[in-house]
Image 1: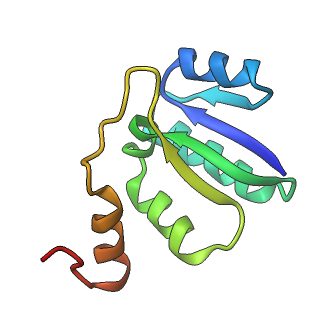
Image 2: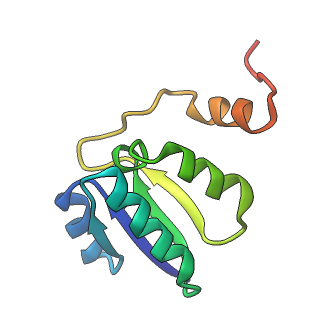
Length: 104
């Protein structure tokens, strides 16, 4: 399985490059969307890692890929400075995806 990283900072790209994962730094919404679309066309890429801050540049595109496509899988990861997500982010994702609130 080939994996590729899209990040908003060079530290994360360098760190994962050491682990054998290629990546790119993006700095704008347009650049991020363009790189994701290139990866969608590359059938060798089965997993896209994207830092949370980079994902915030294109949240609608990320959500569409997660809900409508089997491959590539796309996973948001924290960058070197830590997570920016809420603790119950997965519950919010489920609520948006199926309209069901799992919190009491």
